[in-house]
Image 1 (cartoon, one colour):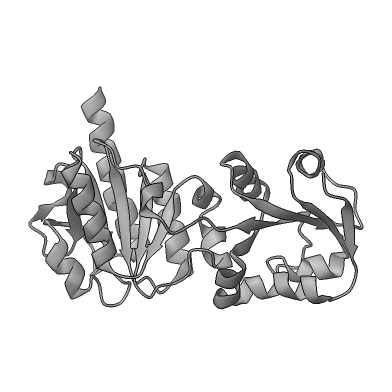
Image 2 (image 1 turned 60 degrees about the horizontal axis):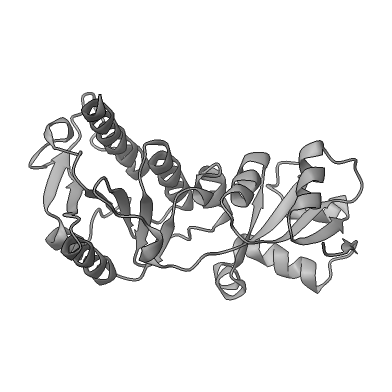
Length: 275
């Protein structure tokens, strides 16, 4: 177990960690990001993510949960001055008990299991990290096997995304790809291996209502950018388009809400089919 270190001033290490909160490029170069909260940190440990450091408030008595983590997780242990630790927190006025520095996994589509029951989500060029985290949470809740974030997009490891996922980020493989071509090649490879994945987009002018589509087959659900929808490249790749029936004066749903509605229907069909 690494020896306990103390940080009481805004030294270079503190500044490096602080930069992970707001600087995407520094998160990418360091290959790490910050996590706080009992559930997210516990799930990061449970699912075997590399915890590089555990930073705790050096001026308080820690809970049994925090003490157990500091004793059992093979990571640097940092006792930090509370006013500094507050700067690594969520700016709500309270000092977090513990902040974890966690390493990012490779952006490898092989991390996503794609068997006969595959259900996945592709989010095209999202602009809101909160929406990314919300879709991760819904995909995890409704039995999806992974999320793909395509193109120039909000960062999966942005603090807002991590927070919105409420820990599901660590349970659901989430992979960033630069373009649709990478996903097309992966889908074709899976199809050649016997998994006939179909690409299903959502649109107000779909081929059918979401209730009438068979989601018990292997499906990759395509969710478009919050403002402009799916790019032309994704529209050309899709196999089917479904619509979410709506009433009232709303003309559309938020991207995360739309994804949640379709994922729930897919989950409902799959549960029903197994009864």
